[in-house]
Image (cartoon, rainbow, N blue to C red; front, side, top):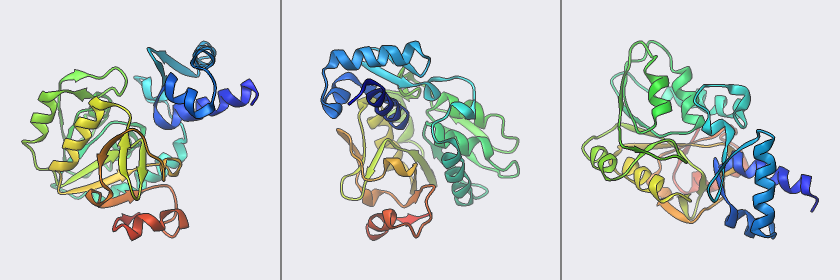
Length: 249
């Protein structure tokens, strides 16, 4: 595989997962970790990724300002956000995770909706705070440098004291047999708590993440109620999820 081809695959994986590790990419691409480090350094020097210890972060996921042009598959995520809005009803208490897809939901939220939002994501909270008729409660704690959300025991404890009507959950991987998975222990603990306390759970994901798994399990597929992608609900790719009992939007 040529270096340009390898770096294109690395960049896609970074944008898809938000965070990648040297060891995982080395195994996936069958090259040394030193090669991966050099590739990531070159991509960082070109301004395409953010280099961190042990791996790299997506540039769009790391930004503090909203720039749609820098968000991976922005149009698909906008489609997902629009399909999610009808799930939101006046008076709901909604728990919302971090990520660029859920950020798009917060950005296009109709101004007349009257909701109460809880979120451990500072970026989501700042976007929701601009909404004229909804209340936003930020669940504070130690901010994860990788995921940009609050993590730790205090966050999990706070989550266990609320009973949301709906949880809007972004994900790195979803599979009809394995369920939701991630690669970050801190994020996994928070997401587990979010799902456990919520009456209904909607997973928002671009189709690239379907039928994929990572190392740490968050929840089984039967703990999810809705799956929202950019695909038509009639897409053959979504049939296994419908057969697992999810309502596909």
